[in-house]
Each structure stands twice: as structure tokens, then as C-alpha cells.
Length: 65
Image 1 (tube, helix red, strand yellow):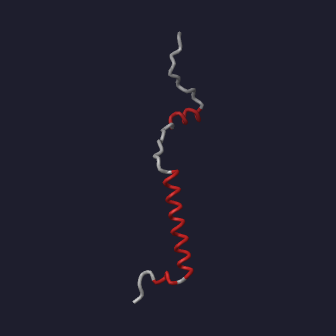
Image 2 (cartoon, rainbow, N blue to C red):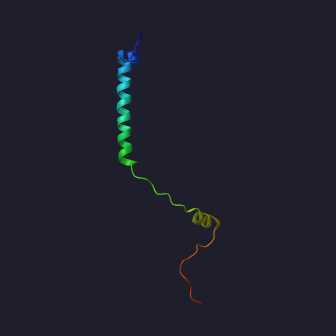
Image 3 (spheres, rainbow, N blue to C red):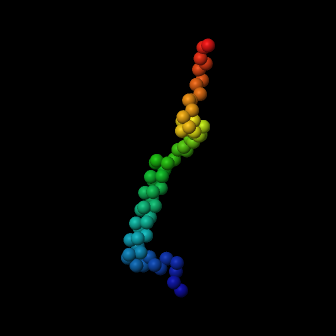
């Protein structure tokens, strides 16, 4: 009865398995270096909508009369 890893007896399968393992290690390293911090999402939908519609932005300063 053949075992589950008998395909690794072929040299090409060994090479492919080694390359995939190296790629997996490199991708996990890249992920841990560049993508470890959470990203804050700002909801600027109202400001973007006002900009697109051409409405003047609401200023927080009160104008003297």
C-alpha cells in the first residue's frame, strides 16, 4: 500500500515542494514585515460628497456680523 508522501520520491516533486516551501516562508516574512499593523479607516464620505457636489465646506469658524 503506497504511503501519502510516496510522490516525494521523484526528483521533480522534491524540487517543486522545496520551491513552494521557500515561497511560503518568504510570503509569510513579507506579510509580517509590511502588513502587521492595523489600518485605521476614516469615513470621509460626507466630505467627499460635498466636494463632488460643489457645496462649500462647512467652516468651524464663526464669521462676525
